[in-house]
Amino acid sequence: MMTVDRDNFREKLLAYLNQYLYDIQDSDGNWTVKGFIDVFKNVYTISLDTKVISKVLEIMLFPKIRQFAIENNFDIVLSKEQNFYPDISFIGKNNGEKIALDIKSTYRTSKTTASGFTLGAFTGYFRDRTSKKNITFPYGEYKKHYVLGIIYTKQDEHIDEYKIYSIAELKRILSVIKDIEFILQEKYKIATDRPWNSDSKDIASTTKIDELREGSGVFADYGVDVFDDYWVYYMTNDMAHQVDLPKPPYRNIKEYFEYKPAVYQRFMEVFKISR
Image (tube, rainbow, N blue to C red):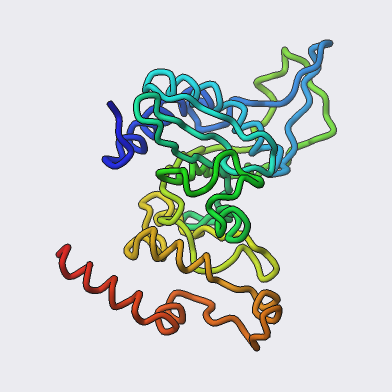
């Protein structure tokens, strides 16, 4: 039986999906999806809009993920609404353990960096772990929280979004993305210590591709407990002002450990013992 603690889940799912790469891109690394087709066999090219690309990639992955679940003795539950967390909930048929899987996509901005993606809210259900609002099951019921990241490169060549093609012209249609890569990590391992932007209540991922692949973000060494504590008590400027604080108690991991030295001390003690 597959157990979450050994992280067989991550290794097996990533290996399973990597086999699928040969079905969604050709030998040159170009995405096999060329556009949308109507009943008259007209083909409309896909927009360069990242939201459109992300949704099509998700739709392509769902059948493969469902098959993985069947083969590995999981039930799966899809999110009820688009803004619900997570995209997919795995439930072990033997032990009832729940695993959260959120699907995210991002494009490369250089050979070593990507645009990054949001990792969900640090308010709401993240803080109230028994809440059922905007989440399939209460956050605290999940054994682990994974992010399936899809990294791709946008085509440099011009895409004519106004041109309509026929089926016979399929090979002439330029793929809007290429060089697709899957990463699969626990959420805390690829998180940063800052929100997506100054007004956001979403956690931002690292933008370094190596850190996404290796799961070596800011919190990777400190563990999920430090990640949880950091974001449960994190405040934006507005949140601090609402409780009559002139500024947030901390804005990064260094300031967090200065604000909560006991947490850092406990980490160092555990780290020494584990060594």
